[in-house]
Image 1 (cartoon, one colour):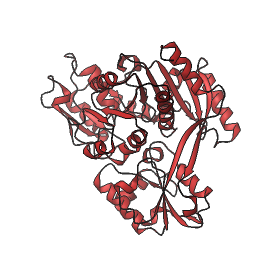
Image 2 (cartoon, one colour):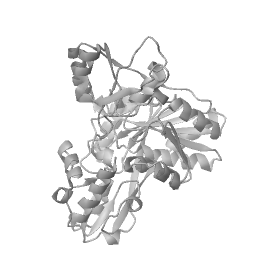
Image 3 (tube, one colour):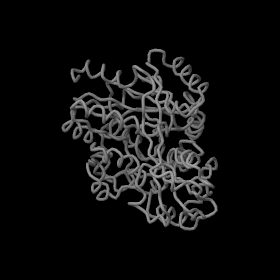
Image 4 (tube, rainbow, N blue to C red):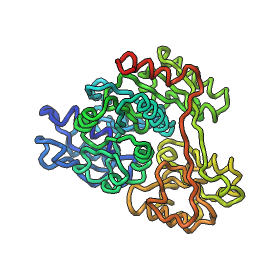
Length: 435
């Protein structure tokens, strides 16, 4: 049971070459357009010359009954513990066992040091921290590459191993908005990003070119590579969610360092509450505070205007946030009105609001396919907004014709404690002989 990422990795490292197992299907959730494809034979290996079908998760009971499958492996992330057990109940009732594969069985090893950045929930600010770490490590003279959690939404065989060093590489790979949100900020700072489907090959390529790797995690998953230092973020704006979602609680309990993220934007009582929960769950971890500093490129263009806010998509959808940094930045800049995109939503975008009713008056940057990108353009064009505030890390002006002036929001990590994350990383480098 997956979402085009962890499921493929688990198959590759545990089941692909196991003659004692037969994988009859992948099921798909969270990401539109994944079901109906096949995991290709080029990646599935000689035991699967026809590949493996990928079907909607709703088909699981039928699949178990018709194929006689006796084990269902849950393999995607940022799902509440309650929802995981609901899915387990579906599998058990259909006649199968229900399994979770853990870090020890699925993490790969590489020959260079690895720092992994993970989180308790989607949207905690992992990529901000990874960018900050990359800059600090490069300043020490190290060759640093970012290995990104997978987002293989296109041709899986072509996406087996991906290397992005230039914006042209993103264009050549026909990356979605969701992929660009993660890759563009790293590339803009001169950091090469590695991703794909077959992470044994991805990691071999990255380790062969770099002195140190940064794992930039997706959702709240644990790493595909064994880290030498694991940094986990817990969100000060979502107190009480430190141990509510799978596998976010796992990476919190595994962490060497926990950063209470966005501590500059949360009430001090909530920051303390999160820190206390972290210390209860993982008393051996160092607990530090971090800030997410939000800046508008042109605040004057927003002041007194009717504003449509575009936010990072996954943070809002399965991340569970009603709005994000863009909404806060527009309000702080004195926007006269935040225009609700529901009033102008194209059918593709209206479907997103129907699927995620918790969303506030903001537009998720949904762009998994061309139809959704056209829906974004249409929703913006039909709105009553005078200005678009874009808080997606991707440059929408390169991808869409937004039909309104567009002001970007930037958000970056800053330390709040002394000694902080930088000092902890310096000590790690010294231990590894890289200081």
